[in-house]
Amino acid sequence: MHSHLVEEGSQTSQLASFIAKDVKDPTIYGDGLTFFLAPLESEIPPKAVGGYLALFSPETALNASKANQIVAVEFDSYSNPWDPSYDHVGINVNSIFSVAEVMWKTTSTMEQ
Image (cartoon, rainbow, N blue to C red; front, side, top):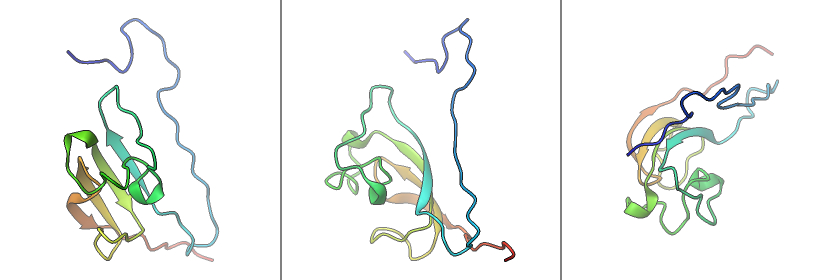
């Protein structure tokens, strides 16, 4: 059995939205962004904060367990102890640790 994002025959006007803020200082940027897939009944765990992508709890973040049924693509510009020492795009399966990653060039080329 699977779930549909939109029920057949229903009318929708908006499925998702994103907000971005243009900052004039190219040295200031956030920690990253994550897109994820999780079971429909999933709940965000308690204590799931920024360093844990707001998806994992500190107790389970590094354990690829059934408690963390999630697949995520992270665009990570902050190096935590479990991360590589450079900004990266990572694939995460059931844990915060990337099972595959590549370097992500985040240097701004904005002119002052």
